[in-house]
Image (cartoon, helix red, strand yellow):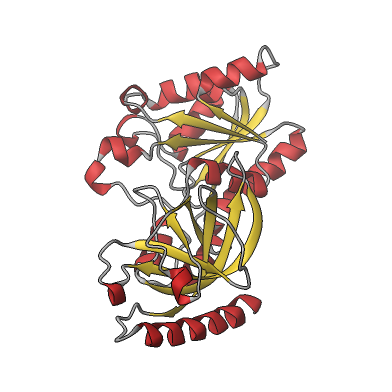
Length: 320
């Protein structure tokens, strides 16, 4: 898979190629949840039928950061993780467009001509049925279809999907995480929610208690589950952000109030790993099942006894 940051990077990499050479989809794709995956599956089917690459356009930052910063959501995925997930579901190339003031002023017609046609030479465009584009979201699937007739590309709008109880959306995932309901979040995503960050030095108290933990520094603006203890996994990421070796982990989210902690943290204890050195490494922490709320214990011994239970519950939860 290729990830291009901006159309200039596309032109520099691709060079002069025949026009109408891709099937394109456009969206933020935050989380690459099951609803996104339905759209991508159709993109991939059409690309294979035509013998051309499947291309996804996404944006960085999230458009609301510029347009309505007070409404900008916590992100479910970094750009690197988003690209990795899009690749996993069949996308050949990801184009990351910097969402700038200039881009926000593009009319629907300008967006299609400069990006869809001149930039990516699309033969077909597949989007969600609620897709909006252009200045003040003036464009919709109907207008995109009309522009497709003008510029000679096909358009397909894929209907909204869900499981009968909830529509699969990034908003629904964020709500589940706020509620600490990582199981429901996983059902919408099609996999456990994951946060990525660097392992940094913490209080180094875990070793004294007999449970070494990785203190994961998550970038600001990323969506994390509500405070509590969770069963999950920790994976080591390589220099490109790709997922590598993984370990079953008991994970705490919140401040360690037993020791008068006030800083909200994500700490992961990798089970059965006594000499694992993670300092300075980038890792991904997956949340599989919520075990309990955060509790202030009367003593270190009471905390140790509870952590031992958490470890056994984690072992059971992740093995199922």
